[in-house]
Structures are given as structure tokens and as C-alpha cells.
Length: 158
Image (cartoon, rainbow, N blue to C red; front, side, top):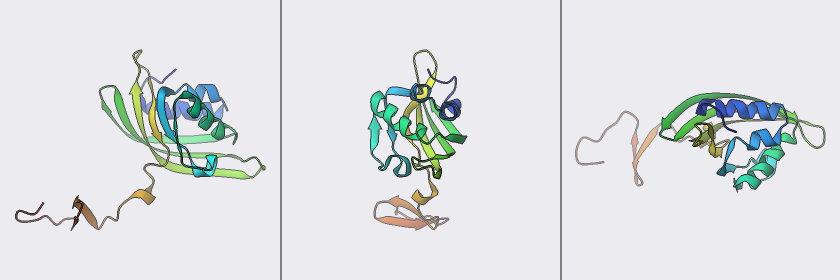
């Protein structure tokens, strides 16, 4: 079962996490979806592909007895796909009873199902983290050339 719009998929995932409901959370993913695991939760950043691997990944989060807060900053829709940028935070308890807090900036590709509902197709929970950003002092125009912001070539260079 998906959400009625791509912006709501993240919110419905947070509700399923808050309810500690693995099945409801897993149902928000396309059967052929991929999700990047989190080192802090799963012990690796391996990509989980397909329904069973995603269910296992979700179970890792649910094992924290989480509360999830999420906001979707941006959505761009193109046909049956949407690119979303989110910011989220999970608080919970690890297997040793210690408090856990995980927060990142995610990038997600949502897919519209034939029934009109939206689900995750690609979920990279930390794909938009600021640590991935290139320094703002340079803009790459070619693999071998960097041009400072605000400077444009005046002739023939590209």
C-alpha cells in the first residue's frame, strides 16, 4: 500500500516506524526497490534490493523501537517517478538499552503504481548529507577543469 502523493511516502514511513510496524513500512517500497543501509543501524552501507532484503533492513530500524521525524524539502515529479529530498531523525534504544539518535538528509526516488499510489523505488537515507557537498568555491565544468563560482570562460573554453 502506497501513499497518495510522493511527498507523503516519507511521512507514512515515519508513522509505520512510530507504530513499530515492519509490514506497514515495507509495504511503502516497490517490490524491486533498493535502499542503502545505514552503518549506525545495520553495521554496513550495503544496498538492499528487493522485498525480502528491504523487510530485513526495515526490521533493523524497528528493532530500535524508534520515533521518526521527517520533513520533505523538495519534490520533482516526472511522469511516474518523483525525486524527493528529505531530512529525518530517528530516536530509539539499541539492543543494550542505550539511547540512539540517527539523523540524515535523504534522497529518494518514488514510483507511482498502476493504482495511482506512490512508493519508494530508490531510498538513499543519507544521500543528500552536507558531508557529500563539494566546496562552494569551485564549479566543475569538465572532469579536468574547475571554474570558480561567478567566473565564466570568455572564449572557446568550456
